[in-house]
Image (cartoon, rainbow, N blue to C red; front, side):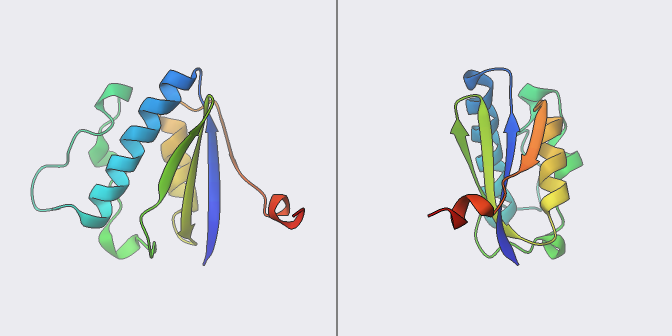
Length: 111
């Protein structure tokens, strides 16, 4: 398992801030939340049903809660995972990112 960074570009920094806030709340709920009740509507503001993106507990391979950070109009999700890269990429695209890519490890090699 490795730490990956998935980056999505949005139309504005304001949109990116809203997406990062929703993603962080969603990630915390996935890791710590009560799954017995209704799924909180984290993504309603983006026209998505959060229920469609809930990851089963057995499919989560994160040792720590992923983080979503804003960099201008971009949102970067950092997660230690080998199983949920595609799921996280699809989610950030569904939230409105028009460009989604995984940051390359070579950036770290330049140091």
